[in-house]
Length: 330
Ligand code: C5P
Image (cartoon, rainbow, N blue to C red; front, side, top):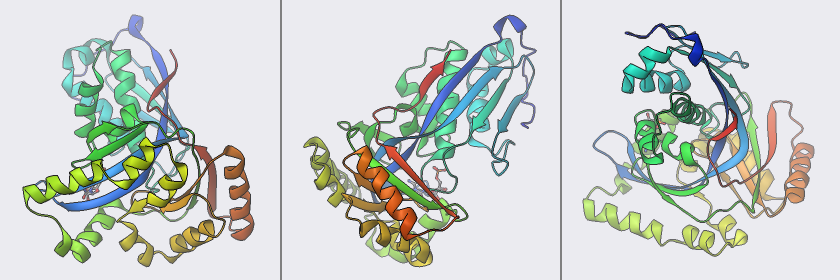
């Protein structure tokens, strides 16, 4: 349960409303760490991609002074550390008169995206709360305004708002849309008990590779430019699934795989079935393999299950999609 926000209003039963939203996960088709930033984050060049593995977020105005979070997975915190709570608190702080008038909100998370997985599950939930409260409170925010709010909460959240396929630079919040890759499919595999801390992955990378960081401004612009015109972006523009598979890249594999041999094993096992390509997503622990059809993805899922019959191993067959947060029902 969330805590009370200052100056919250009493709400009013006439304004009780409910919205349900679909919050898709993302995978990283490309993740290059370019260097350090003055704000302590890393300068990145990424290609982010939405998939049809998604949480459902129900929002209901509750006419009280409270923001409350509920979740069907008891492992997810429902206090004010939950990103969905933080998203609602940010909206309340940004639009105090609307919040005073309409009161608090109950946020129910139907969790389908695994945690600590490198799939931006918490970020997707927060993005859904921003989009949902914009609708519920009739604010009429633009995508850009929603993304600016999202960037205050986390680096992946701006992408989760609009989703699809995008080049992400800066700390991940500067987005350039790319042509859709929604003709490809992905098999995802993750040991349920293995969650990777993103701060740990970046910190470990910094301690091992800081010497190779680009530090001057022109070097940084040059590296960004090279990604814009690079092999992955051109493979996407050419709608060449085979080439996209070959161009998959993730710098964080360099620190996460040596520390977690079971992820390396997953990667190697998936690769031996010859998908278009295999890569770890974000800071892990999910590994994904791209395929050209839903049938191939289903087949690959069965092959992996037979090769690694481990009850701790979660396997999902998914499709790459062209959208972010979607309204399910008014
Ligand atoms: O922005 P977000 O809270 O999702 O980031 C989680 C952690 O990942 C940060 O605390 C930081 O350690 C690391 N990170 C980073 N550079 C980025 C994005 C994330 O170092 N561009």
